[in-house]
Amino acid sequence: MQATSLRKGENARLSKASVALAVSVQGLAVDVSALLLGTDGRVRSDDDLVFYNHPAQDGVSVSGPVVTADLGRVPAGVDRVVVVVSADPLQPGAVFTRAPLLSVTQPGTPAMSFAAPDFTSGETVVVLAELYRRDGGWKIRAVGQGYASGLAGLATDYGVDVEPEPAPTPAPPRSEGRRNPAAAGPEVDLSKVERLAPGLLSPARQAGKALVDRDIANRRAAVYLILDHDRHMEELYESFAVQAFAERVLALSATLDDDGTVPVIFSSGGEPFLEEIRLDNHRGRIGRLHTQVDWGWGNVADAMRRAVGHYQESGAADPAFVVTQVGDEPWDKSEVRSLLQNTASLGVFWLFVGFGRGKLAFYKNLNASASATFTNVAFYDASKNPGSVPDERFYAGLVDAFAVWLRG
Image 1 (cartoon, rainbow, N blue to C red):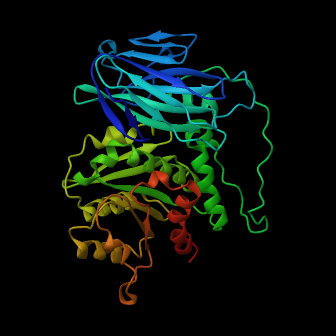
Image 2: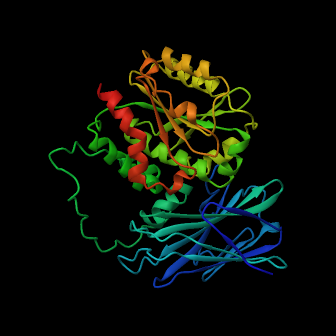
Image 3: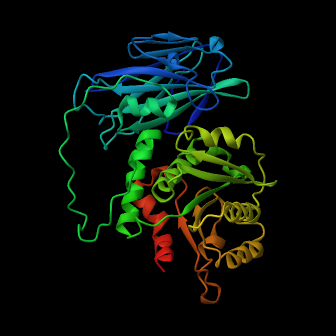
């Protein structure tokens, strides 16, 4: 049987038999562990961290570089099993540079493999893959997300208390040669991100730098997120792309809106579904929420009205920055135009972010005509795979037009 190679974000179905996940990394001593997570994306107790000092829990075991999950024995309260590989903390200064390789085997089925991308930002921990329940069975998703904040940072995200790691040898300071010190504003305070969601610290720093570079680091805004829930977006939800996008918007919000919460509105054929994603619950949050929403032909105008209503009811004094992800043309273009015109005086800025496989000419051309210019609207094309856009370029695309509007 020919082995299957997974790419980052891809998933595959598993049988209900035992599955073995073997990790190998060249040139670096590592520890392999697993986390058993409930539907809230957090461990039920500290016992749900399975590692060399606690090698088995509820059908999941760790032996050296191999995680074994007997899927039939995993309790119903466990929604996901996350496979983690971390640099040996007894090697001060050790970080990932080469891609970890994961080999997945089940009896009677073709083997699978996943090579995570190489890492360049001092990552010491990598979430390599996750097993998760779907439609009465189990699937595996290739994740490949690195953390520069160590095992303690990752464990904080998932609700585990761990002993502090040995302090690493300080790395030399990064060169600031590309920044003009005279033009730089104050640093953005990220202590709340570091405490509640250390895995978002790196993108939050890039978001903060984008604000500093555009001289709006001291400004505040209520950040909203609208997500397209049309049927053609299903693959992007399934592949973790929408979750990753929402996390990057949350990281931006942490630099603009200090409550650490982003209202999320799903645009589908029915009543817009409003929830929230927070620094303390973001892991897997979009995947869990979107299963409560029917697929449809997204009514973006209704979702926009819901965002404006929530903003007005909140009594917020700061402007609203509504990041609206769109995957295709709206079905009622005149209604969207009317909403944009009517909100221009309300302190609401709309950023339409395009990714997906649909046509987006309407959003791209909103300001193409001088007679139909919307001062509170911009469009950013994040490509079909926004996860491939580097943080620096991604946040420039998000805040460029917003900064001009805010300063005006």
